[in-house]
Length: 172
Image 1 (cartoon, rainbow, N blue to C red):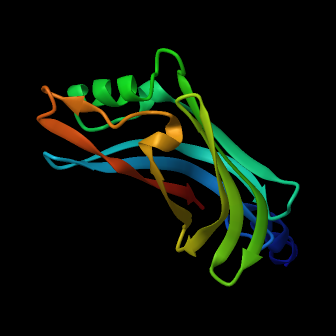
Image 2 (cartoon, rainbow, N blue to C red; image 1 turned 180 degrees about the vertical axis):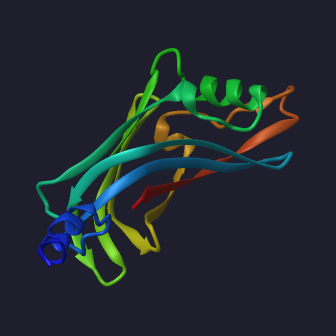
């Protein structure tokens, strides 16, 4: 009988989603995608096995550093080109910071700051959509936002479009 009475006290701290006041983040990932004259590309980074608690308050923030060398684009040539484009030798880390959280009916709204290739880009009022076992956001930006020109390869035969799509996922 005593076991049944104590059981809820042991189970409650183990719950991963604790309601709209806080979430336990178990993974973080970012994918940068774009189009070229030859086709699309997608470069991603993910980290798993986390237990970061995100409290939905204006004082809390969530950030993670990304070693630019750790982005994977599917093959060594794309990896090398992506790292060169982001000036990995000058700026070996990128950073994603989310803060100023406000809960709403779809999940939570926040401000996201990307520090990549030595530039800080702020996205105000980004919707983190709540889906089963995750929060996700999609951002759009251009190479010019990073102070970069879209890369060209093989004497201009392969050109990268200016637009970049960024997909952020926080696993719950």
